[in-house]
Length: 449
Image (cartoon, rainbow, N blue to C red):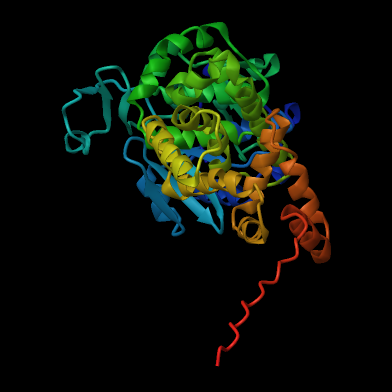
């Protein structure tokens, strides 16, 4: 493979000067790199994988950049498919692992501006197009590795590792930014945010995940340009919020979203409730839920967006219930109606899939059912498929300071004891049984015969 790189435009870090080893790279990613190289193409490990390896981390994903076109990559790998229209990429699948392969991008010399009224058909065959606000609608102009580097978002994500001589290539001073723990946009930050407003969320996610600061010029436009997120589809924003809160730093991420005035464009119903001084318990519950998510991920446990969104929308749900029935315990019907209204309002911002909204509803509804009254109500709650999630949610409510008369402790003990003790706990709910009075049959009147 001929690298054909201008050494005057790149910092080359030889094998002995960095800590990346092939043993830390996915075997599937290495297969893709070697096959592309053997076919005569340039191929590099790029992005977060290189960054995390340099930080002694363990990347979950390995991305590859190459001078092969998507169609050429597809021809090389039968286990692959081309996806995307705005930005064509190739997914090469090995079992459950997917290696993402992108072709080097170049600067758009000639771009077509697409007005709001024009349809997708109009740009279907274009390689390059942008909206009137500067957002990129098509980005399939191919180039070389140096051009590709400056088309990436942040300097720390624009480092390339090659198995040819095992060196790292840095075209944009990403290595010094890693050493200084800084997130820095490549190019003019405002222009780059306008090209893709989701970069605002990526900057915040990276800063929280890596515990990096955001460089001053990269940081300054964020609050002012956060409104651009309104132009992003709610489906894409849902996917991005899941990434935000499953990066292992959900608590810090939410704090940064609020600090930079971005949360309002993702969770406006929640933010409107948290601004009230009386809702301290709601704020605590949300903080504890995000912290719990971080702890579960650190322990290697799974998390579901349904639980996260159940916590995020709990404040507006409680607000809706209070407006309907004051401080009284709502009926199941009232809760279901309020839940529907709250979810519909949130869907304006993030399109939560139905499989998650259904689970959210179940978690919320079980908060009522977890108030045991008799044997039947205990059995219904305890055997429900969402019992564990609802029980965890109940514990969060108590930990946040909500007065629930020891419900969390009751259910904790109920799960710890044997069936005889469980029966005794259920019997105690119903109080001592009072003996039934025998009703005497009325005497038959004496015969007058």
